[in-house]
Length: 207
Length: 80
Image 1: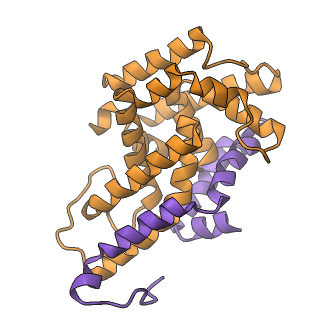
Image 2: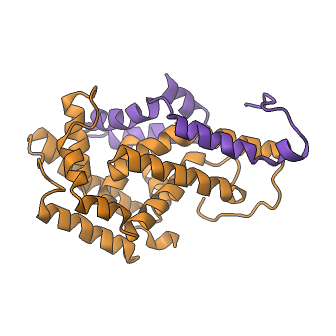
């Protein structure tokens, strides 16, 4: 995954294998995307974009390696690109995020899960991403570092900080009710995104 | 359970997952909310796939070269 190799001609069998593996990871892409951007509809758009990009780039997939890790890289890069284009920011500005965050994420969801979702979305994106990959997606620190194009120590640090923040919010019952709608918290998140978008953050290594 | 099946199809991932679980949740002080975070993710994984995704996958299918050039059957059963 780190060094994409070109595999000149794919046989129909290989293409079918690729399609099958891609199909299998779609539910995981949806889960990762929803954790990243919070809104189910935007998340699904992101996943469809990711599937098309993965399909187009399938010659660069190394058969036998993790399709999930490979497509997660594509998804996060698409997410960061959208961030750069202010697509998600525009939604935030319209207060949509606040509405989402102050409402339960799903009707059937137990209260503590909507609390969890809300708390997760208050984290800075880099830490949220690291926590999602390791704590929810089940990736090792090494794999998460590869996906994010950063050092293992960086991932560990981000996960550690995210853990501390969530523990503080969830176990002390102190979840900001209007976190993203709140100007201060909102500004902090967007500032981090600016860093990422400017190439000083996690995206830098992946170009 | 569907998640397990999916994970099982990716042997690398399955073995790495155990490592990660140990690192993250099984360690000295796994946070009380660790399971909730996983559940948040797994709940989405377990959702039925919306039609839009099935349609998209079908479109990718239509683009498969063998279908056009060789006229291969729709699903020749090469699943594993």
